[in-house]
Amino acid sequence: MEAKVATSLLLPSWNGLEKMTKEPSCSVRFSRKFREQDKPQVLISPQLQPKTRISNRYRTVSLEVSCSYKNFPASILESGSFQDPFDEAPILKKKSQEIKTYLNGRCIYLVGMMGSGKTTVGKILSQVLGYSFFDSDTLVEDDFDGASVAEIFKLYGEGFFREKETAVLRKLSLRPQLVVSTGGGAVTRPINWKYMQKGISLWLDVPLEALARRIAAVGTGSRPLLHHDAGDAYTKTFTRLSTLLEERGEAYANANARVSLEEIAAKLGHRDVCNLTPAEIAIEALEQIDGFLKKGNGHFAF
Image (cartoon, rainbow, N blue to C red; front, side):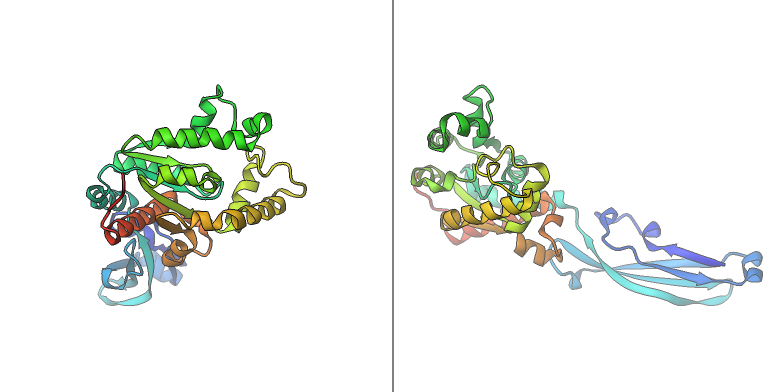
């Protein structure tokens, strides 16, 4: 007989434990006679070791699996540890509360390449901060009865779209407590920076390989600067993104703070940035904003 023990089944209900990234297991063999007489008792002893956690979002849990029978002493069969992620919601709430005083109602402008997650992360930030969320591309589309950005590019050209984008950013800059997701090319016009500098600009820096995979998977039809190129979806997307980043890289670097997905992945032990959750990126965004505000004492010109 072989009795297999899944350690995750008997652990106490710690916060976030359902998100375990590893489930250690062990097996014990018993003779037929031993099995028929009675069932052995298998015990699992978890211990939380906060001092050995690798980051402020993970904690190390040590597990020890032992087996005992009647009056025979227990013997250790398996031991090990795994990283148990904390629940992200309380961390988001705590970080947002910490920076609210420093923010003082100022807007947050997310900049970065197309497909970098500005809208997804922006919605999380607006929710935890109690801000309103706007996507500048969507607002431009609304002015044209819902015509897509790709359609506006095709009918009127990129220059016309950029003018409308600037008009949207000007209007938004007059309002407080907003999180704004900007278009990938918004950083190319100095006038846009004039409006965004009334708040805090945050660059979502995503590796090109990850961006190309993400965009190629959903198609390039909605990306006016991509879908005319020849070749397979990934190759043409990666090639075009490389050119765009060359053109815009210095402009993105003008942002007040930078969120590097590569650095987040390294801190959290992910090999691929695509494994990061939007909440993990949002937490890093809040930390970077916090660092900028405290470093610069939060002084802005209005």
